[in-house]
Length: 555
Image (cartoon, rainbow, N blue to C red):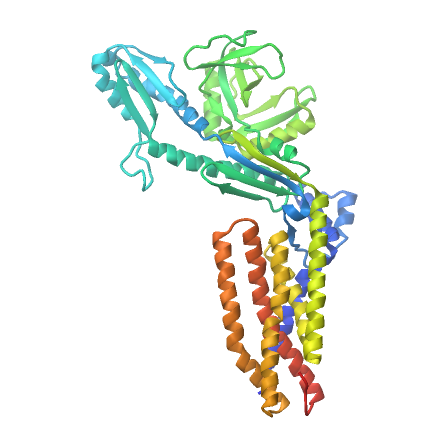
């Protein structure tokens, strides 16, 4: 029977209205974007809005949907970086941090093994000479006591430390299983830190993903240049607080074992000899905000977590009158003398920085330090003009395809072609509505998927209309022919679209970046086109048929 239940009619119309309502903001992109940006800025400011922000918020009604389809790097312009994480640096940091524990463990056996002394060794290894070489087994056993089992399936049965002995020298380094685990952990941590830093500056929809074993792909739409992005995420921002042993003007001074020589950031020609093992690190910071010091100069106020506050308090209590260096990325920011114990867990960094630099340093410290340095293998800035050209080309292709399909359908099927064209327009609205709701990022391949959808969207209507023609040739009445046409075409429509949907799913799972964007728009387009071709055109036909009651129809 050629009829549709009332609840189905309400459901079809409701879905179309909701989808078109969510697609509507994309027709007023800049206005809605300014509205959304102003709301975010006001929320970050604790609710205080400037007159400009209030004007921007008023540019779009608050009761209307305000979700937009995010434009990708190739459409909006921005920066593209491919970075390699120097995972070897983490091995060195891990081994150097082990020295105090190893020294304590060996010192406990001093009556047996004699005196101990750290000696030079290759990066990532820790070498210790013991006095009584014949008691090396005792030293090895003490060092192995510091090892812990590796907690992975591939490293089952292995420890994180590899301890070897030759002559009177004990050598400790990370085991191969622990190195593999450390590499993976370092990449994941770097991904998270980069994501936090990019999010802190409010850029929208960045692409930050792992590539290969030790590389990270970073694409940030809307940012000015690759250099600006590198300045934001390329800074290691490793903050440590180290004891000062001496200061001088010789950059080539030979430090002792376990010591380092670092330059002063704001005192040219001054170099500090420091203990390499820090007392507290930036990882124990809980917050950092820009501020001003007692002289009104820009500064950064920070606070430690309870563990960091305790260590900071204990050290400052035991070393009143001694200098204490604050080090950022291999440079001594300042080396103040401890006047009194600092047990509150908070402190201040000041020096040669302006307000912008203080704000940037606070952002970096809040996001956390990169576990290892990033080396940039590839950098590219995509100008907004190129993105606009791509958008214009995409619009032209879509409009040409749209007009061609509508003209062909109307020329081939007359009034029924008009119904199919109306459904096609609704289909495009639903595609953009869904992309807006899920916060998808549209790229050039995504536009290709939408253009392809325009052509495929009427396939189902062509199948239905051809079946209706066959039924009319078999001398069936108009209502019966339309009803049988939909019934006979249904299996072919479902089979064809399911196979395409499976292909799109495979592309999404196996592809990356642009391929995934193509798969997403194609999948959404298939679902919406089936909905509009089967239900929207049928509703239009039934409504027209109920009003006109024609005795004959031409398809």
